[in-house]
Length: 387
Ligand code: ZZB
Image (cartoon, rainbow, N blue to C red; front, side, top):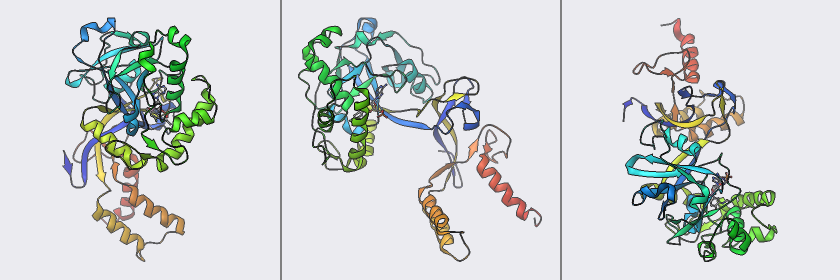
């Protein structure tokens, strides 16, 4: 790693316009001000049977890749959802792997150094949602050795990868859709779903939440009298309740973080999935961002210089200054905010590539980030006369 003093050169996931070929800062946006990058975990569900359009990939490492915010729930996967009528692609990734997902997902991955070539995401073949239904998959960490791709009609192709892994024990949406398939013969017929792909897959108790028990989603769907996957308003209520109570109060019943709270287990299971190559990080804007050039922005990995504000020695030095008589805040709230920010600040991106400003002394591809730049030169003006 390149290092100069307390600065290091590193990677940051940034809102980016592929059309403009550069990061899209707030002032470069026509909509989406303040929208940041959301980190998901891209779960790799290995395809064990191949639809006709990609028969020639049999024997290769091909995965349906699902974006999730709940890596700690992967022990409870019972199936994977695809959108009937949707079109997915198959994309070549590094390490001879192939990912099936929406083109939108592939574009984000391409700018996050996951595809073979940075910024390129040619689809090698089309794969329809319908052709994936009933295909067997191996889902990482799942209680079930083999699960199946099933239809879900509420998938949004504008979110994640358009592929959704299913944890009916803890996701009300997943339970409502699975229960529909398990109990409605007409629905199975409509999408050519066999009983064997859904009926034997009972929700698995993986997290206990004192208020809801071991199968939170099942209880919430029952309590709120949700009739089907089409009850979107009630399902939203159920999801919000599950998230709210689950994060601090939920405890894992299984797996490598057994006994821990959801809050604590999330990073542990996530790292485990990454280490075992069962998943990859995936980022996308947390809402729609359009650049002034009219481009739909994505998230790209960009390199820049960071300052190590997190260093304990620096922190201690500033903390003791804060406590000393040399420092006076106008009120205690401000004083307290300083303390919080000192604790929270870790790595500060201190460079930019656009606009006017001071060139970074040791790497003139970059300028000093505008906030730091203006602070430094205003401070400099106060002593410039003496120098
Ligand atoms: C596994 C999982 C287990 C999920 C759980 C949720 C829960 P959110 O919650 O709305 O911010 N998801 C991902 N992509 C899509 C899509 N394209 N269309 C519809 N749903 C999608 O979004 C994150 C969750 O929405 C993801 O996390 C995924 O389902 C789903 F126990 O993956 B999840 C209380 C929720 N529990």
